Length: 217
Image 1 (cartoon, rainbow, N blue to C red):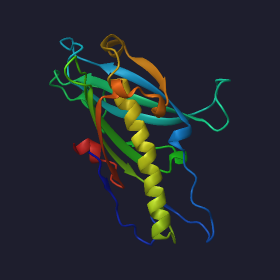
Image 2 (image 1 turned 180 degrees about the horizontal axis):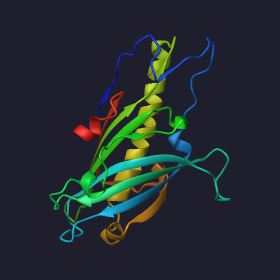
Image 3 (image 1 turned 30 degrees about the vertical axis):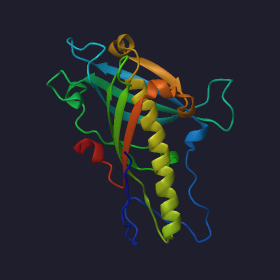
């Protein structure tokens, strides 16, 4: 299930408006096809949780990291994703457990976005049913003075593509081995390398220019 809602931008500059001269090429953004994601899972599971418990997560931060691995090519970007993870068996909301007041976080400029929120729900499968995950994302992009509708659509699509890739790796992390989820761990992965059998049934809803969508879900 996929959904992309676009918003109408005012022609007047705002605090998130970029002023650029005519003929300036579109803003460069990170290409998820050439991105290595490092997902750090922080555990907030209850004592009653087990490997079959419904899992919930909230992305807390996204950062562009320096290249430190000699095996990383010059075309590849390393993006760090921090995922708060827990279970639905705890009556205290996940953000409260993590000491967070809001699900919205600032985005690096290189992503072409200003702020976002992302919530993840995942349920491990068994011999009869596949793994299941659902990701709900809200993301805001800056306005650009004098931008054409085609350029706006291009930036919105770039933002959607990037956040979709983040959602894929976040859901994949949340479906990791329960023993590792309990302790917290870091997963290094490229979206294209995710095993489809482990991914199972996955759904994403992405709303552009509404960063609090996930927080309201």
